[in-house]
Amino acid sequence: MNNYDPLLIAASFVVAVMAAYAALFFGARLNRSGDDARWRWLGAGALLMGTGIWSMHFVGMRAMPSNVPLAFDAGLTAVSWLAAVVASGVALHMIGRDRLGAGLFAGATVAMGASIVVMHYLGMYALQMSAPPVFHTGFLAVSVAIALGASAGALAICRVVQKAEGQQALFLQFVAALVMATAICGMHYSGMMAMTFPEGAVPAADNLLRGDWMGVPLAIFCTALLASALGVTALDVKQQRKREEAREQEEQRVAELAFIDSVTGLPNRSGLEQTLLDILARKDARKHPFALIHLDIANFRELSNQMGDASLKSVVSEVSASLREQLSDDAILARYAAGTFFIVVLDHEDARHKFMYKRLRQLDKLIGTDAVPIAWRVGQSAFPVTGNSTRKLIKAAMVPRDLSDIGRFDNMAADPELVLPNQQQFS
Image 1 (tube, rainbow, N blue to C red):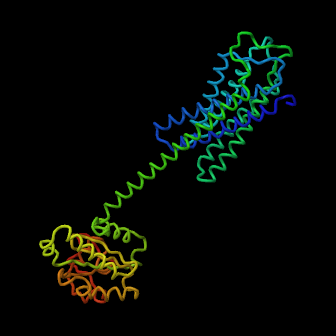
Image 2 (cartoon, rainbow, N blue to C red):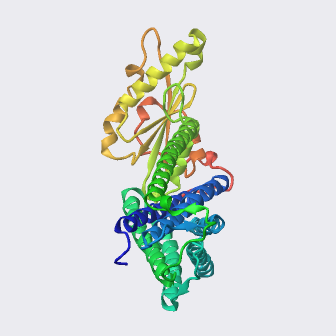
Image 3 (cartoon, helix red, strand yellow):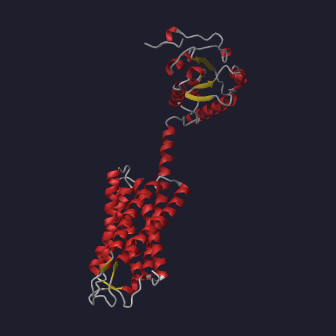
């Protein structure tokens, strides 16, 4: 190796790093893509990664000492490139699988390693020298072992790295690319020592590919190609991620609208019922009592007959805003129907709700004007005393009570007539 061109050795390593990073990058995309996109990522990744490994090989060959200008057979060179692409396709396909058992892993390692060996030695044969090559059995075995080891390591590393996220993923991918590139170069240069040509051998005259462009120019071209492809792909992934985030936000917004009243922005009937279901579904629900207060605008029909739609919506918004001002911080206000509201009061007998109940008992004075008088019909229920289901609690809260009773739960009791069929009260 002392007579090898250090610039070309360095260039071959850079190309190997880029090819390895391409494998990691596209492998991660495969694991997160649907069937159609998966095949596109696989094709592009195999093409770029295979071209990178193949280019590294020929740049490395140009680094070896030679007294004659090198030339390559076009057909064998093309086949060696195809072997590199196949090896890369096998690797990426296995990297992108959700599960990879020991048998598949071993098979993928052998297939990838064999493709790399074929790529390397076909590329060497593409020189088509005037004298046959000489093989060194020890280095041949070492090169095959390294190819298999590098393939197994690459598959294992990619499987681990693709699960990382954020800055950690970038760091791990870079370190993994260095490790993989070192293994690829180790296989290549040991293979170069395993297959040598006698001194004085010259390339065949009918070799169509001249070796001048196989060194630094090829390294620069391949590095630029890989960098551009990765850059364009990264931009595409970023834009796709933005589209997915926008779609998720829109889906979330639409889903939330199903539980939100469009006029007041409060939880609607579905939102209230879902809130109650969530509370009742807790394992320790019985240890966390709560109250449900029903507030109904008794003269809502009269108001709707007197006002236009826009004016009525404005009044409802003002009423809901005024109601929110009367509530404790953790009380939940919902608009159940056109003129009907419910308040969910967690831990309803706690002293922190004392002033809220006092204000609610004065609703007829706090909300409404001479121009728009508001008459209230109210009621309340408490879990688990008056019910243990959403339907029962809502029904019990709709039983009319005097406004002065709001927040007073001493005499609360279940109404047997409101018990649903086959439903039992908590003891």
